[in-house]
Image (cartoon, rainbow, N blue to C red):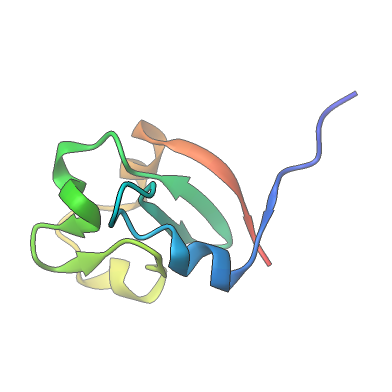
Length: 80
C-alpha cells in the first residue's frame, strides 16, 4: 500500500523559507521540494535570484536550467 503524499499549504510553504533554522522548501508544478541541502540555496536564497518558501513554477521559464534540477533534491509533498 503506497503512502499518500504529504499535503503542504501555501502558508506552510511560505514558512519554510530557509531562514532562522527552518528548512528551505520550493514548489514547482504542484510538488514541493526541500532544497535545504543544496549549496545553491544558502539560507533560502538561490544565487540572489529566487527565495525559498515560494512556488517557482512561473519563474522557471527564466532559469538557465530546466526542471530536471528537481530530480537532485528531495520531494516532500504536494502543494494544496
